[in-house]
Length: 435
Ligand code: S3P
Image 1 (cartoon, rainbow, N blue to C red):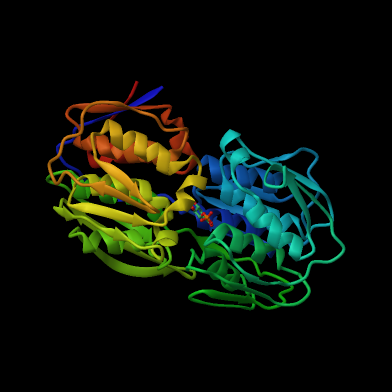
Image 2: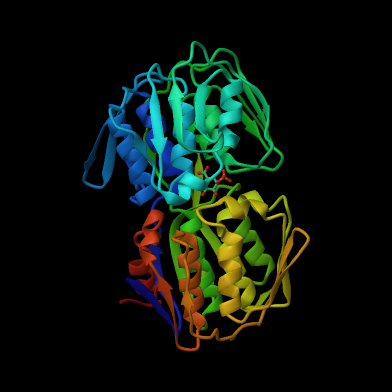
């Protein structure tokens, strides 16, 4: 199967963006360990989130879908049951890392696996702090899947200074801290997304979090909740940039998550000259949401600093695409973490940029892209995705400004986070075809 993305005359209309991936994982986990039944609306129905849902069912949690909502019968912090089979998390770093924290406090053993890409991703970053807390967790060759977790006598709260800015690591520690003896304090280098903190607070945990410091006090129970998941800002990002770089565009995206630790891209694009308006502000639980209107714009180059990186880490590939259509040289500092995502995203993007005839270079740990300005038409080519959803969607958006079309190999990987991407894109006027 191939996705063909053709030159498009302009994007128009209004769509609702499906639920946020990070928040969907957390909603399923928190509901499963609360007391009572929680209702989740607008859950992201992507492969990643469905793998987390299936794992929770294997662990004895009853989850049913009625109309458009999911009902989860919580069993308390230590109420999960041993799974007969290994738990499979597909492509999802978030699913496996958060679940590792939670399984570390159960009184049974578990084996956690994933697909080829996840099997290569670093797990030492969660193994180390979890071992310090008293968990019994090990990986293969210390660092990779499968992960094996066996019950430990006691789990202790931890004071932990994070060596990497990672919400997945922070969250694995927080899930393991539920029911632990003593408080947990986590200090971050740069602020990473705080969805776990907000959701723990919503479920009644005694938690405080400010910029770079999170403290979870001993907590015994979560109370079940109704959760409405905001639209995924990272999914919205593809259409925001599509509208900015396509001529004659004017689109509105409804109920998009506006968590401050996720929207660095929005601020960058506005600084670059993007015509973007955020309005209808409200909140779903502890998470802010708003509608976003975007119109075609002439963009200037951008500078991404190391502090920006955690708050736009998933948007870097599509921001690279925006930079190709901006005036001047854009620079991206300390983007090392890009190499440890669903693929080596730096390499994947460098290869695609070569085919787009875009000049780019690495200067120490600064990656630079020389923009060609508004109206640049990229040559036709076949984009490699490395089976990475965000790489596939980034090139699909670039194709809207192509000479005639670009082809994207194996677009099925888009289902990892955004199964509705092609259909919603077409609704807005993206010239997408499947062949
Ligand atoms: C996520 C955190 C980020 C992000 C990922 C989702 C989360 O990963 O890239 O897509 O839901 O916690 P890291 O924590 O590894 O930076």
